[in-house]
Image (tube, rainbow, N blue to C red; front, side, top):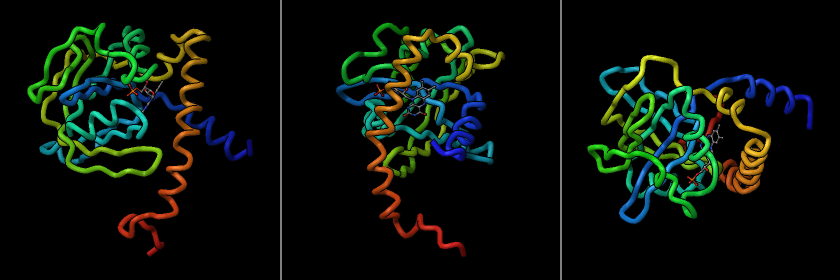
Length: 199
Ligand SMILES: Cc1cc2nc3c(=O)[nH]c(=O)nc-3n(C[C@H](O)[C@H](O)[C@H](O)COP(=O)(O)O)c2cc1C
């Protein structure tokens, strides 16, 4: 690894982003994943918008593509086990919501009853970049159940024992290998409206 790669990785590792459980459902399936790539994407408080970056190979991503609806949940600081439930495996092989107490959002997708807070979004734009599908969503429901700070990535990773950390590492390496080609293809054939020409 070059010095630049080592330094960049070390800087990214020093961040401590919130972890979100993103759920969605279609007519036939439901699911959810753990995500750090969820962000406020609007300045105007009258029009709250959320941006989520999900991997194209993930089960939950397909559900969001199909339904156009996602729920992003922040967790309380003692919900590491719940975070782990959503961070591993694919919803194609295991119903990750089976062990959770659920409610139904007004838009019909499953939401977690016990969590820090929930934002439900209706997707209005999407960009696929090979390694990510970025969804911009108007927030159509919001529930806050806690005033304390939500669970963040570093506290979750500290909670994981060595065997869990190994599973997460292997999953991530698998995702990177799977997405490398798509990312490279995207960069070689950028749509004109996304090209940067320096002017
Ligand atoms: C700390 C952490 C952050 C993650 N962030 C994201 C993310 O922002 N987007 C994403 O698509 N996957 C992310 N993942 C990976 C997914 O949570 C994981 O691969 C999940 O099992 C996919 O589930 P699914 O295929 O059932 O949708 C993250 C995993 C961890 C441990």
